Length: 351
Image 1 (tube, one colour):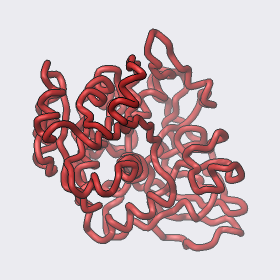
Image 2 (cartoon, rainbow, N blue to C red):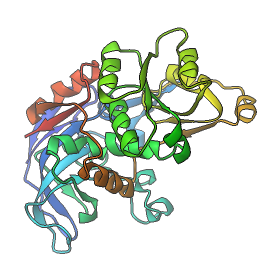
Image 3 (cartoon, helix red, strand yellow):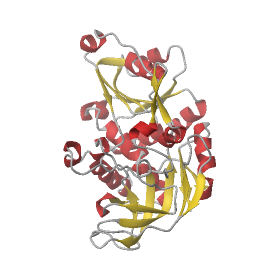
Image 4 (cartoon, one colour):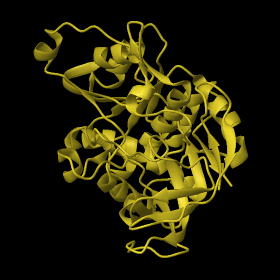
């Protein structure tokens, strides 16, 4: 089995060959057909997250110690089954839900494994899709993606379920009748435009500092776009939403976007932070009760949410976002392109 591993933070990925694993128990071995390259991979490869105020979170504190194989947006073909694996067969093609928990704690029993304190996330804590094979612990994490191509299906495992999970946190009545403001028009922001429509949403106002990404948002179906770097960006958003936004989702998560997101809220508005860019903000405590706003974090999504999303995709309700295809051996170069902001939509590695 060939994989492209992080052997040292911020260093080039290393090509490694080792025996292909054999599945035991309920495990399933899949041959990688497509693996998305995600912004989260950049933070993992760099070895730290920005907490704001000059503070950093070392990924070693989150259980990530080199060497490891990244890649959590995985589509694979089943090539071998453990003796206890049921529900799939050799030759089946599935998108892999990577956000796997311990299976025993309170959140796991609720079906929210992505919030487990003892995670076994593929591509993060366990070997992922920057390899030609991936070992999946149970068939339940394999989800049918219908007639989509593997390249189209792979981003649903992270960007898709992340946007779906965040959108579900906005009141359904707000989604149906008011524009939802989406900060960031990268892969997540573009997918959110299409997913919102598939959920019966009124539409999205896309905010980004990059004109090319705003153009991509228009092509994807945004109702309007706003330059997030404009001095009056918050005022423009309040005007576009007739007095303030009732739903804002921030796919960047920087100090600047958090300030923008909170400034443009209407009374009773809901601000959901998804992005992991890092930073901090200062809020008056009076701001929260006086305006009755809520601020919430959203981290990827559950297996149930991925299953619901893929049902929408199979029904043709979620048009695929732009995908830039790269061969698997260019994993390191593709990661660098994403870090430089040169990817529109999602980058996907293929064998």
